[in-house]
Length: 427
Ligand SMILES: Cc1cc2nc3c(=O)[nH]c(=O)nc-3n(C[C@H](O)[C@H](O)[C@H](O)COP(=O)(O)OP(=O)(O)OC[C@H]3O[C@@H](n4cnc5c(N)ncnc54)[C@H](O)[C@@H]3O)c2cc1C
Ligand code: SF4
Ligand code: SF4
Image 1 (spheres, rainbow, N blue to C red):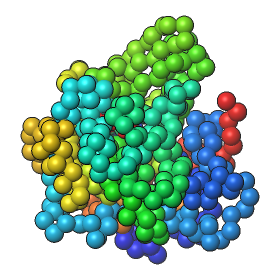
Image 2: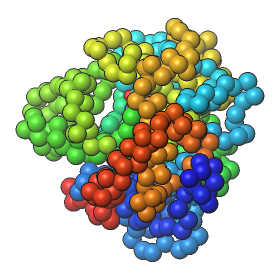
Image 3: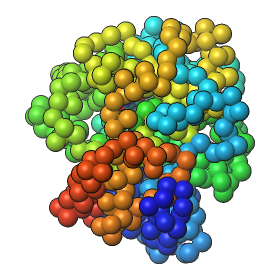
Image 4: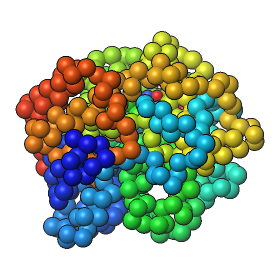
């Protein structure tokens, strides 16, 4: 399988949206609903706790092709060539960067509320207050069902702060993306790397993306859980979703406690390490296991945790890794520092990033073999380019590559990779 060749690499030539889902390639970003319109495709929460598209009528070929061209389940590509700055450095693992640094939001309250050091929240506020954009599109807790996550538009600092913190369950931030372009106003987008891939894919078909979506900011991503993960947390506390007034996964400290509040005034808390202590209960979605870009290769800026060894040993004041990948991203970081919105306290290197993100290094090295394992099993695989996975696979021995292929094929045989045709869950 060749990373850059559509013919050799992907077997996803003409497929339907249902096949994208049943092959485990959908992450539930919602862009297909936005491209097709809700009368043809609707995102629903399935009984398995995944946000997935269902089609109400058969899609015509042109629309089907358009969705396949933008879907981050079928197309995953690196930073577009025209955005690669001539002064950028290129690392096999960490990709294109103009700057890698450690930093945090200058305002203590933003730093505290943010998932890590509040860098994404600080940049979003800065973009609005410096009038670089009219609004910021991202996600936040659903006001009525706070365990769920909804697309969210921010126009003010208060709006941005309401969206601070990582949401570990399903999220479909692109459900309304075409309507945002229709506004004809400059905006920024914050989302996961797969959301950014979807937007970059769309930019190849719709010139308004590059004109209007001025900044694409992302987080380095270990994977998105199904909502079952959150249901199990509720079960452990003997709670039901309808009695919740707050479900905060993270933030209010670094990493901060997972905090749940109920209508009758009770509060429940879990440490980050308790939330993630049992890997068999992470409920990470299939698409994440073959994610060729969990580090935000194609974003303007990616923000990460920087815990030594990859996990927290307790609470700290909050420090982000910041990877400025494009000239636009670097200019934004530098302006935010100059104007006092952001503090950079250390320059970092790709090898430092390896140390604080060892799981991302392992994943980048393993993805090619996992995709090859899927292809050999007859599953559909995405088209991948510009993400160095074919080169990185050579860091694994032949036996290690085989183990990755065997592992994913076993998941396929056990029915743990593919998904059923999605149906709406009534709740
Ligand atoms: C599912 C998930 C997995 C992650 N895994 C890792 C990891 O393995 N390694 C690592 O270093 N960091 C990981 N993070 C990122 C980390 O938790 C922080 O988000 C990141 O360090 C940025 O911190 P911050 O303080 O700048 O974010 P904040 O200032 O709190 O801003 C967070 C922003 O992200 C947006 N957001 C939150 N959740 C989602 C979501 N589910 N989908 C789309 N947008 C969202 C919010 O709307 C907000 O704008 C993960 C985050 C998520 C959501
Ligand atoms: S990944 Fe996004 S665009 Fe692709 S099928 Fe799923 S929801 Fe639709
Ligand atoms: S691991 Fe990849 S596919 Fe999964 S949520 Fe993160 S960026 Fe998206």
